[in-house]
Image 1 (cartoon, rainbow, N blue to C red):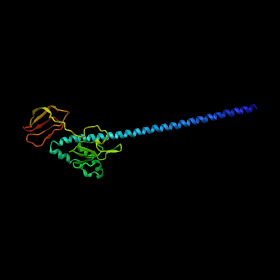
Image 2 (cartoon, rainbow, N blue to C red):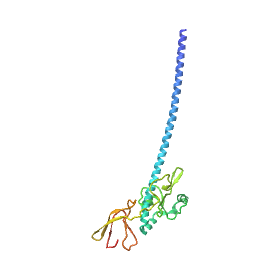
Image 3 (cartoon, rainbow, N blue to C red):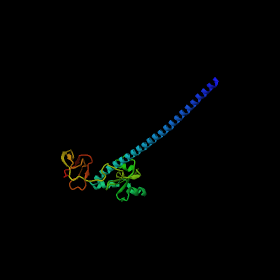
Image 4 (tube, rainbow, N blue to C red):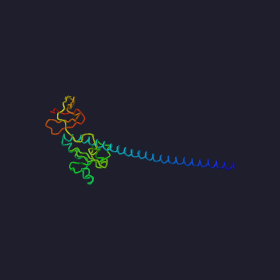
Length: 241
């Protein structure tokens, strides 16, 4: 009788242990499933954030390149207004726009006339002192229009120009000449051995202008001479400037 009671107690205890082990296994499995689900969700968010970051960086790089090209074209636009030689020179750069695939050209121009446009490959842009550009563009120096041939897909829309990007607030693409007053300056003439050096000093730009380029023309000459960033030039014989 005593032996039967001991067996019964042992059976009861073993049954409780089995029941407890089942509960423990169930809780562990449930925790594991929840952990896996949470990890999957966290991984999904990380991947999404990474893709978004890559797209943002690509768009920033793309826009920065277009801004570099646009700034150079703005400068060339001003130079072309000074003499016919610059117009002829810059019109000869790049390649004829016919080298661009006609179907691409239709999308890039978007019903704009192709008159005055030139195609610039990455190699062609080096002649404009633009060395680190990864895209091909078309340029119209007369209208200052710059457009990427390949474009960039942003929010289900292909952007070819800076103004195509949503809420672009960068440099002014639509040029407005606000220079209504000529700058004032002082002139210093220095006699050299075989020439005269003319130096412009105390240049004051009026209105909202922060700076400009300098060019000069000798009396009765037709063309202006562009002296880039310098503030001086030389003449070989006495002339009216």
